[in-house]
Image 1 (cartoon, rainbow, N blue to C red):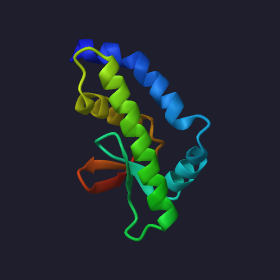
Image 2 (cartoon, rainbow, N blue to C red; image 1 turned 135 degrees about the vertical axis):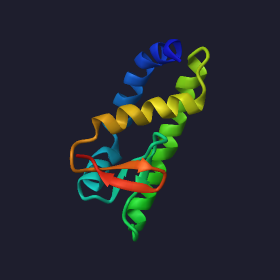
Image 3 (cartoon, rainbow, N blue to C red; image 1 turned 90 degrees about the vertical axis):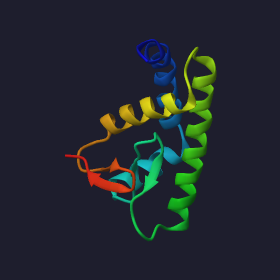
Image 4 (cartoon, helix red, strand yellow; image 1 turned 180 degrees about the vertical axis):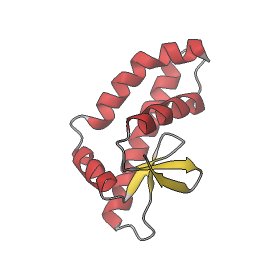
Length: 116
């Protein structure tokens, strides 16, 4: 796994910059996270925290997750020995680590906690 992680890291850095920089959803995602509507999941995707999300929040989450999956798949395809699941897991670890204190992260599947 260390070889895979080492090969993925440069591609992952590019992915993070593409997912968050210049995106029409970046401000909306940041705002939704700050409001406690969404959080980072253990699988590398964004999840809805609130029990009654607006259609706009649901659409944003779906759009972001589709783009993330495409990016994760591209990284896995370009990295010898990598799988989509391995890329998703590495992305989740990094995204959760970068999540600011007070925002939601998934502790176990379906269990949301505010990051200390």
